[in-house]
Length: 93
Image (cartoon, rainbow, N blue to C red; front, side, top):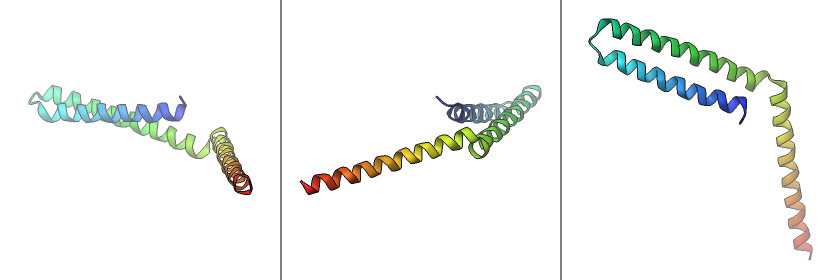
């Protein structure tokens, strides 16, 4: 598991919790509970924002991530070349 996938899962969980708190706030007539749930919803939005900022940083600025992507792309291109060469060799037989 990578940090990037962990952050994506955390974002999904935080979004879900945020929605739950919003639903609780909407469904209660208790003013104190409503305020508490609204505050918790706002807190979760801050979590989502923080996680999204980190995800953007990792995606756009992390040199290691970019190098891994380039390596993976090169490996995929190499695999394609091997497949093409194998197909050519099979046709020449």
